[in-house]
Amino acid sequence: MTAGGAPGARTLVDGSEGVVLDALGDRDVDALTALWRDPDAVRFLNVAQPASRADAERSVERARAGDGGVTFAVRSRTGGPLLGTVALHGPAPRGSLSVATAPAARGRGLTTAAVRLLLDRAGRLGYRVLDWECLTDNVASIALAERLGFEFERSGPSTSVLHHRGKPARFATLDLSRDADRAPVHPCAPTPEVG
Image (tube, rainbow, N blue to C red):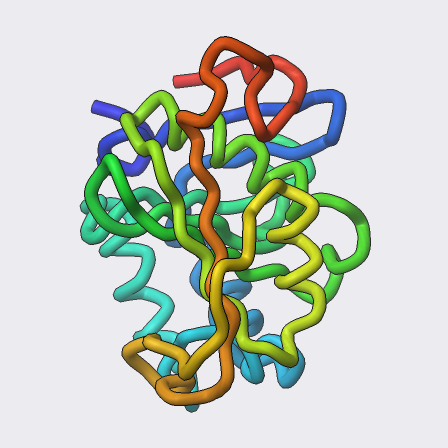
């Protein structure tokens, strides 16, 4: 069994970037609740509002079970505090990606490094194409998607299932199988696995 019980969830480490991805756990519930209540995050996260501790507990349980994909906690060191989450949703070969970054981690490059690790894991899990939906006023998310090689294909109303449905959004895609004979489209240092 892998960390957290979810298929594909292991501890991933990129020492060159100071990022650790591991299982979301009970110790993360309060930090996850705080993240989901952060006014800057609430504008962009697809989380029911007002977010409660019970919502965070259910999310941790779903992550353990692997319901709907693979979710990782983002940390700057093994055993460190929760600085965000990154997740793959849907079955391979085509899925989607989501991120949430705590205020203390914004602007430090941790989310970029975390998503690079997640993209590496996605390829190993059989994903070939990943989709990313960004609300048009989420400049940081759009910049992150572009930095990681996602290509924006269209704009239109958000398709999210919660409170963003219908808001203006941009839709991007990353083809992980593109040019398989060359370096990955998501370059990063080797990612040793623990667990």
